[in-house]
Image (cartoon, rainbow, N blue to C red):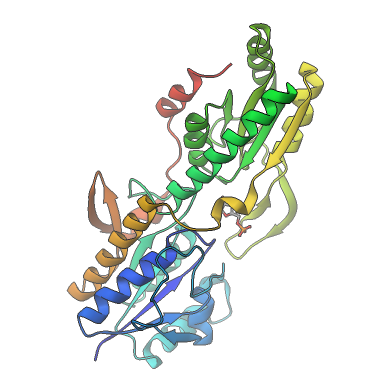
Length: 341
Ligand code: F6P
């Protein structure tokens, strides 16, 4: 009997379980054996896995997080990592592996594929910054959560005549800030792609208040920069070289209050954006990705990633997905700017 493994890597994301369920069901329908590797690439190095059966995947579709656990382990940063991974892949009797992840997890998947392993990828991240696909699953859920939070912050900002700065996730790309900011009617949206001009932000807010408005909502992505500098919590980096971001919301809030004289509060949404149940859009997208990934395995098409193009699920080279990040383009930002102030 042929055997396929599934793993989830990087930050968790609503919809991971929907992919696991769809890939497993497709594999079982085709008489393949399925195992789930635990805690991302770390599980492959430690040979830590569990069987995935009809019973074990039952009821997981609406659940957030991942039943397999996750980690940010980078095989290529561990001593003898690649050799151990290749050896374990063989010893575990695997014919193929489906890696569900963002640019880091899929970057490792692509390298292992180039070293001869049969690997297929599924694009995951709430940040939506992965190339070669129109949308990653998880993004829609994050945008819905943030939009609801902005709606809630609107009513309290209005009652107290305050400015509220909302800090959202988005390390290199401002997709969450942009989409939720437009959907939530934010008065200013700040993203990593465009350095913050604090004088401009304050003059937009002053102009808005001079026409009688007594409150404003400012959405800022955690990776937005003041004078080209990222704001970090400390200097620690993870296995993929990422520094811990955070703090831009408070710095911005202080500057706004000082420069405008308007009372300002700051809300950092953090991991709330990644938790809980996926939206139906993400459940369906994740399900389609999961089926496609397993079909690629059945067809022996490795080094590929399931991808959304328009409304079609297609497959693209893993290499294309990890070559560079998909950031917000200026045209899209111009739509948001129409509503500034
Ligand atoms: O990778 C997605 C992401 O949500 C980023 O926007 C954010 O910087 C990061 O995860 C934070 O994740 P963690 O706290 O798990 O390291």
